[in-house]
Image (cartoon, rainbow, N blue to C red; front, top):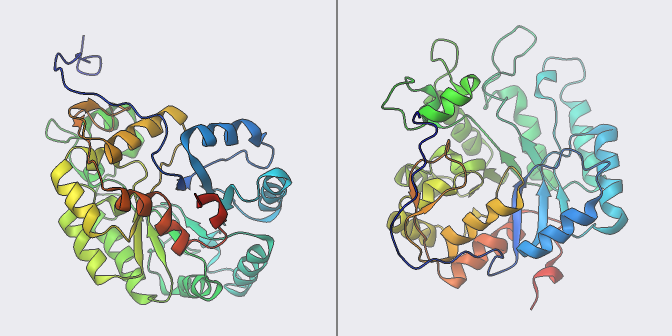
Length: 339
């Protein structure tokens, strides 16, 4: 047996609660449904009802015909249960017609029914301009895009970088060692990649340059393990919000600090999950709602440590689950959240 197989069963006896439905209705602001143009949505909506998820934001709306087919499928029966975000090609920034063609695409997509722009981690890491140079997150050639989002009144949900540990040596001191062993491509060789601090600084500079545009920082901006730093950014950047997709394990291992932090920034944080799997939401509910101790996260490679419940006040849960998203993302049907 090696360390990857080692999975001891705890002998600890403490009270357990295993919620399978959120205490309050919620909006998942970070989800990906890549087959939505052809997907039978009945099963998905039935599962959403079981979870108490009233609205799912599909960040993978893409553009063009794919986007049109997605919206057509959603609008057949479930126009009030899904919010669709647009995706654009930033590598066109040196092409003839930039940025006018993309700005028109954004305007047309807004008329069709999109309610946000999703930016993938490629920007700042792998996307290049026509000269083969890395496109920085705050590249001035992209400024018209962010300004247009502010003009259209749609938020930008942006994923920049990766966990800081992906840049660290792959040794016994790296707490993401198992993930890097199982998925070697996630390692960011400092000799071949911009540093973590560089790409994150570019993102923060982007937020500063566009105060009239609302940004939702994906995955707590990869500062879930440094809430003091994230809080300083929150204080500096009033147009920055954040969501907890794929980082609930960071909050669950620091229950006292995370509880105080979420109460302090209760108006700026949103519920998100990222990869869709119904049973994995249960861990989110347990961390956010219960006072449980020493329980497992659902994916060992992300968190070999144990979780603890934050037992957040109801008023804070309501904001994280749905009220904050309703303030930032247009097109959400408020009737779904009335008692």
